[in-house]
Amino acid sequence: MEHYSVMLNETIEGLNVKKDGIYVDATLGRGGHTKAIVSKLDKGHLFAFDKDEKAIEKSKEILKDYLDKITFIHDDYSQMKNELAKFNISNIDGFVMDLGVSSPQFDDPERGFSYRFDARLDMRMDISQKLDAYEIVNSYSYEDLTRILFQYGEEKYAKQIARKIEATRKVKPITTTFELVDIIKSSLPTKVLNKKGHPAKQTFQALRIEVNHELSSLSKGLNDALDLLKHDGIGCVITFHSLEDRIVKNIFKERTSGEKVDKRIPLKDSELKKANFELINRKPILASNEELAANNRSHSAKLRIIKRI
Image (cartoon, helix red, strand yellow):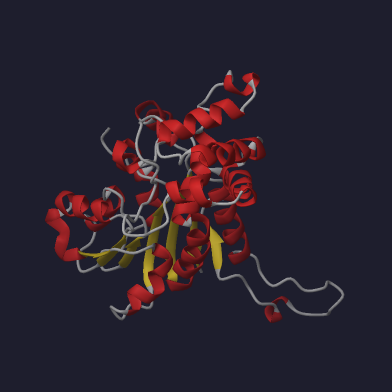
C-alpha cells in the first residue's frame, strides 16, 4: 500500500510555515509531512527524526529535490533537545508528530508488526535495538505481560492471554505472529471472537508500544519540543489511539493553564503567572469524509495544535 500522510493539508495549514523557519518532523516515516513543509521553505531548514533507518533511506529518495534543506537524524524524537544542540539549535518555529506505525512498516510482513502476515515476532522500529516482541512474549513474567496488555492494549482479557502465553512457551518458544494470534484467539470467549475487529489488535498494540517505548518517548519528546518552540511557534500532533491522545491532551492542558492560586489570596491578575501556550483548536481535528474514503487508517486519527504565546 502506498503511504498516505494523514490529515496532511490540515497539519500544514495549522503549522503556518515561515519561509526562513526552523522546523522539526519528529516522525519522518515516508516524508509526506516533511515534503510539504520543505517545499514552503526558502532559507529555512528542517530536522527529520526517525528510529527506522529504512524509513530514512527511503525518504531520501522521495525528498531528493530538497536534501539541502533537510538534516536527517537516526534517533528517537525523545532525544530532540540533545540532537538539535549538536547543530546549535535551541529554538524552533514548529514541529509535527505523526505518531504510531507508518503504513510501510505495517505492510512489510518481515517487520512483524501486523497480525495479517505470518512473520517472526519483531515489531522494532529501530532494528538495531535488542528488545523485540519475541523477547517480551517469551521472557516477560506473567505479571509483566498482564500489566502491558492491560495498560497499553486496554485488553480486558489480559490475564487469560498472559496465562495462555505462559503455558504455551513452557512447551516451546512462541516464534511467529500467527502462533501468537492463535494463542490470543484460544484465550478469548466466543462472544468476543464474534465481535467486529481482529481479536489480536489490542495485544499487538500493547507489545508494539512496549517494544518501542512509545508512551515514554511521547511524554518526554512532546515536552521537549514545546520547550524548544519560539514565540508564535506551533506544534501539530496526530494520534491514533486513546493512550497517545490522552498524553497529548493532558500535556497541552498543563501548558495552556495559568497558575492556580487559592481564591482567598488577594492577588491581582498581573501578579499571576500566565500560561505560555494556547490551543489552536479546542477539540481535536478529525479527518474529512474525502480522506476517510481514501484511507481507512485515518478513521482513528486526531490532530491537536498548540501555539506558544
